[in-house]
Image (cartoon, rainbow, N blue to C red; front, side, top):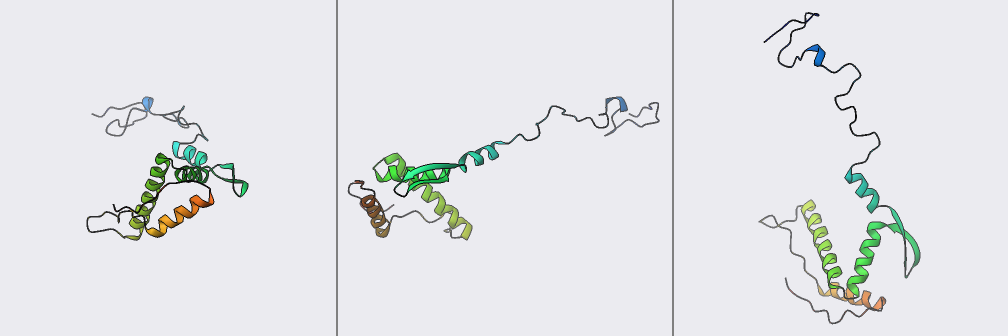
Amino acid sequence: MSTRDDDDYDVGYKKPPKKTQFKKGQSGNSKGRPKGSRNIATLLEEALFRKVTIKDERGSRKVTFVEALVHKMSVDALKGDPRAATKIIELIKYHDARKAHASGDVNEIGDTAPFKVTQADLDIMRSLARDLDVSVGDIEETEE
């Protein structure tokens, strides 16, 4: 359907009437996203990578929030907190899986190799526990 306006303009597919078109310099969403507003990814990145001050055996120092969180979880895990230990192991598994995936080190069904705690890992954990004067009880090597 084609009609004629005063300016000899064809109205049709992808050609709306002139009176309903946006005026020059006018946006279709004039109250859209304000300039300078940040999305959730930006806000999360700013929160996780801001500098915080922690106090540990080395004294007071500034680290990122993520570093402080991992440090706190590690200390809590060594003190015997099972939830913190589980979270640390999950983070290690996740990191190892991402690293294996990036390097192409996957098995025939597409999974990364399972996480296994070796005797060397156990020795390191015991040494850390001794250094932090933390009792972690008997740690036994287990097969998954």
